[in-house]
Amino acid sequence: MTLMSGWAMIVASIVLGVIAHLLFFVVVPKLASAKGVPARHFERDLTYAATCAGTEEAQRAAAEPRPMCLQAYVKFKREEASAYAFPVLFPYDFFMMTFLAAFLALAAVTAAAYVPWAAGHTYLLVLFPLLYWLADLAEDAMLAWLLTTPGAVSDGRVKLLKSLTMAKFVTLADAYLVVFVLTVLALTAT
Image (cartoon, rainbow, N blue to C red; front, side, top):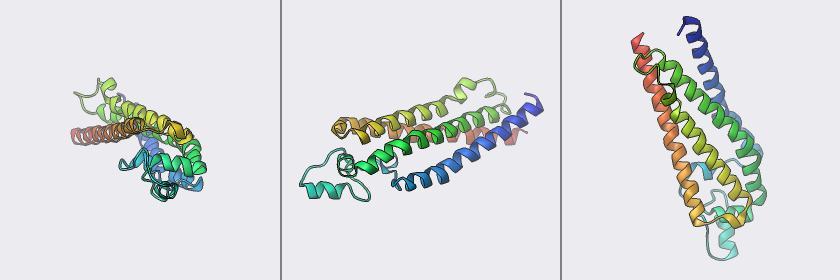
């Protein structure tokens, strides 16, 4: 790698990282809150139930501030559920996940360029960011469908949704770990 292309990749990684993290921590939460979805619990919390039984009053209660029942949330909070799906998941979260995956992939490749044994393995370096992006995209697509199709909510589908959420968490953590380790190795090698 030439000095100029190395610096260009470092700058591009930093710019993508700043944009991705601004989207993650500031922009998307503010936009989601403005659309009536201040807490995106179904993407971050695995403790909610798929369906709930009981009286209509009990089900309505299960849809309140921190929904513990996806089915009740979709049934009794239709406008909020619809806004959660569109535009919060698509396109807001889609843009955020894309920038975040691009940052993680480029940062890993950039740092690896300074670590001789890792430099030629681009396909492995982008694996976790790509897997994160695919898991997040699949999770968002399934959640958007469930949020807009009350009859589709079932225990099995929510179990799959939670599995996708867990896969998203694991692959994102792995991608950050790869970037961190390679960056430390790159900084100590120079």
